[in-house]
Image 1: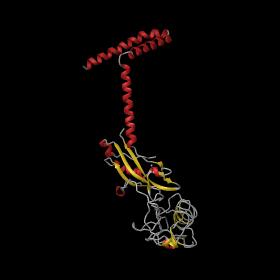
Image 2 (image 1 turned 30 degrees about the vertical axis):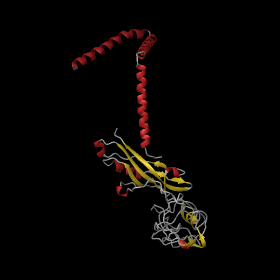
Image 3 (image 1 turned 135 degrees about the vertical axis):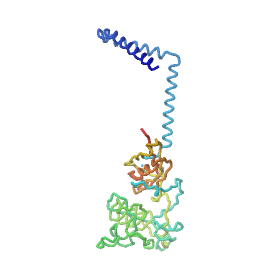
Image 4 (image 1 turned 60 degrees about the horizontal axis):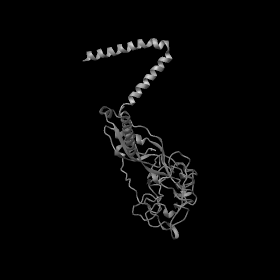
Length: 364
C-alpha cells in the first residue's frame, strides 16, 4: 500500500513538472497574456464550482453554525465571568465566609466601635442609652478628621481624650512628650478609655503606622485635628467637633452606645456595586502561577473567588466560589491578595465593596 501511494505521488510530481515545462515557453514569450489567461481559467473554475446545486446553501448553513457557536461561547463566558473592573502569602486559614445577601439599613449612623450588639445608644464609645451631656433630650452630631498627607490609610488605634484645646495627634502618643497632649473636641460623656497602645482610627483595619492622607495634624482623610472621616476636631463623619454625623450638636442624656451601625451612610458597611458612586479601579492584577502538579495532570479550568475590595486598599474576606485541584485554587488566592486598586467611593467617602474575581488556567 505504501509503495502504491509513493508511486502515485511520484506520478503527480512528474505530471506537474511536465506541465511547467510546457507552460514555460508561453510565459517567457508573453508573461502578461499568460497571467491573464491563467486568471480567466481560475475564475471560470470558481464559477463552475459555485454553480453546483446546494453549494451556496451549504456555505450559508456552515457560516450560521460557526456564528451560533461563537455567540454561545461569548454569552456563557459573560455569564460566568467575575468583575475585575479588581497578602502576598498563601494563607487559607485566613479565608473567611461572607454573606452576599443585602442587609436592611437603619436610619442611624453609629461611629462608636466595640460595644455590645444590644447597646441602644447611637454614638459614643461606652455602652449606654444616652448621647451626651446636653440639658434636654437630643441626638449628638458632629465629627472630625485630619492626617499628615500619608499615602497609607490611617492606622487602627484609640481616639485621643476629650480636650477643650485640641492638639496634633502623634501616632505613637508617648514618643514625643514635648508636644501637648493630643485631644478631641468631643463631649466627655461619650468618651471611653480603650485598650489600644497608640492613637488611631478605631474603624481602620490597617496596622501600618500612619495618620492618614488628610491634613491638619489629626487622623483621617480630610482636614482638622480630629479623628475619622469628617471635618474638624471631633470624631466621626460629621463636622465642627463632637461626634456622629452632620453639624456639631451636643446630645442628651448619658453615655453613648457603641454598637456598629449598618445605616446606608455607614462607611464600615461593605457595599454592593450599584450602591457606590465610583467603582473600585484595579491598578495591577498579577496572574497566578501554574503548579507543576496541575501541569502534569493536564488540569485546566477556572477559579472564581468572592472577595471584598476594602477601603484600606487590601483584598479581604476571600471566599472560594469555584475551585480547582492541584494547588491552583491556592495560587489564585495568593494572586488575589496581591491586587492593587483604588477603593470605591460613595459620595465623598472611601468605602469597601464586594467583588468577584475569575482566574482562568489553560495549557497551551
